Length: 487
Image (cartoon, rainbow, N blue to C red; front, side):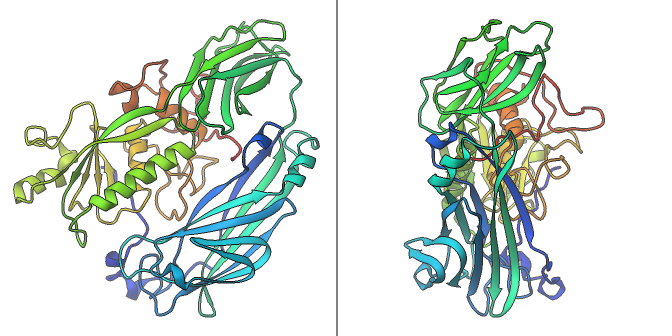
């Protein structure tokens, strides 16, 4: 059985206040790379993190009431930064927020300049979900214009640091250090091009490439960027190489995958990748009373919106579409069937609480935070879930699952961080799917996207994560931690 542990919430902490341990004195550090190139200059350079508003000392925890409101001390450094924006969701009294230093107040948060600033009176609700803050960096166009033409490939051009101390009075109760490494992508000489047709939106697409390059070397998992046209150097016919593919990932569009594209051995090839709308996956919501949550309907709506936003932000190309929502009858027999759903369907289908070949999400009085059943079309969400639990469990339905040690969790995968949505345990920031995960969601034969039928296209056998018996894939599937430089 798979159980996802979420952040502590108020009613669970009530029994643990007396044994809570002090906060770790060292800040949690999250490191991301941003790849600068002329192509990326065509879109806004934004890097998104979601931060919980709260702390980890007795009487001060995410979602718990505090004796006083919290203050944030913020420091932003880096010559490439023009400004940053913080937007808050779920504060008890947003109007009470005040700013000091290098900051300006906005309707939902603050605009921050380089240097030091303070946000005062961040008020926590007495119950409910943890308030969250979204952080976006805006980089200086003058710096980008200078950096785009300089630097060797992978050379660091700047390091941006955002330090956040959450204060209860004079005591630091939670700290984050976000570090952005800006690097040079290098510039390819004009030769072969991947052209995207029918694309919706103007974001910078990610192109995944396998094949034989101009030096007759078999290239595996080369990642390139481009809005509608992407230079890929000289890509030759497949020859003796194991694989030749082009995969295109972008917001609002389904992943496009071409096997054995029509490359030639000379420059000037233009390979067309036809893009269409994101794949629609029907979702049925079954709603039952939970502890302290008599009506989970609004939470289910928020969770589905959050899941769609995360999958779109990470260019997965899948949209979860609500087909119906119904209340779960409150009689003990039906509630027991739901609580034990992952042990077998029982009478859920005959009771009209299950739709075959579609995703079924159950909100009810279950003892788990979140659970994906052996029937991957069944997901349970409990009262201790957080705003990324549903997105995490849907990742299991989309093939990141397996045996007891093969759930597809990212904790022990080299290169993964707590920012990954499939991370479990002490994960305060979950906003990212890797490119390797997005590939599996779309192409893995075990993904419900393929098994349920919404997607038609090439499929692969991809293990959920590396193991001794199933090491990192080579040409069949990209490595699980393979990613693209954000944004």
